[in-house]
Length: 418
Image (cartoon, rainbow, N blue to C red; front, side, top):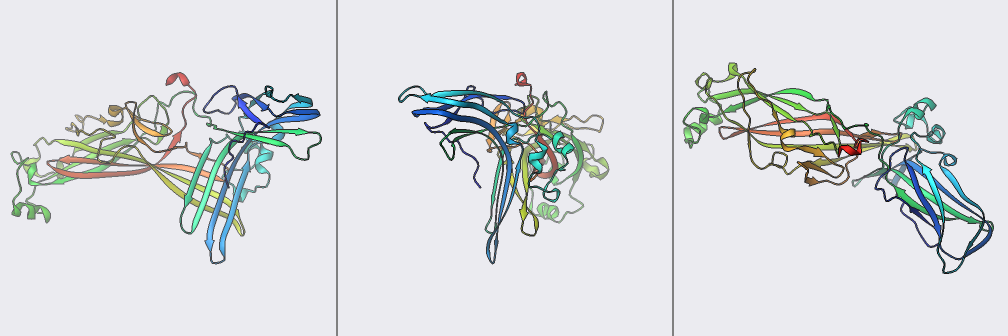
């Protein structure tokens, strides 16, 4: 089930006037259809059309051999995205310049209900298939995903491409050319300013003799290590609560740093009396963040709809760093009213691109294509944010984990923001 590739020959080729990397719904594609070979015909036709579709394929191993299921949704009616550029005679002399037929084709902003519903039923769709719902939905971005295992292989992609055709009156079939385009789905008009932060409180607990003043760097004796190992009540313990504010919405190429905030509040009631009033130093030594992208597909099977899912991870920065920073950060804290919030995301200037995470504009780790969250009729693409915070107190580490659903938005339409 291959994606459409560029096809261009002297017989026919599609050339674009603007060298744009991507297009958006509503944009106008300007270019021309070119033919260079010697041609003399009293009547010929040249057409250009825009295709948009979402395809899925699932191959499962069975005792009787592989079983294949497919899903296919077209977004456009071809008579709605097709232009006739020539209907008449054509003369292209040998060795001369190519004949070019210009075109300006506007990308629709919505799917066509008739095209989407053709050959599809509601039990094989993640979205409603009523005319009203389809007309109100948006076009998904270009997308591709592949998942392989010994017993199951599936593919999913959303693609948009131009197809040109040249046919003379005497021809039984036309000469064709194709050119894929990259479509970025509609996003917000302006950069996101609120990231829908979610707040959670995680308990922290450190037990060691090094919490006692004067023993911060002491080498523990065998007896002290044994007491610590068996959690003896004679070993001081320091209790605190870690307040984490993390985002549930990301926007790629947003100039505002992605917020991730840490606040530490001591829990005096569960802290040993011997160190209750002793100021402790808490260091942030590591913060890792990873997006888990899950792709779910639906296909038409022999006995009803078939589904499959696969996951890809996008790690922001090397493990053991603070989103790319190698030096630990001291987290100031005091009573609940005195506690200072550490805005790690703002401190490192964390941002997200289609191919990497960035810190202060510099690439942290390249991870290939990151796609916005979306759902179309036979493909659902969703994300979760996984993060890990490592804190160090008196030479002892404590780890805090989090996992939460998030939405990934494409870049805003405001190009001046970047």
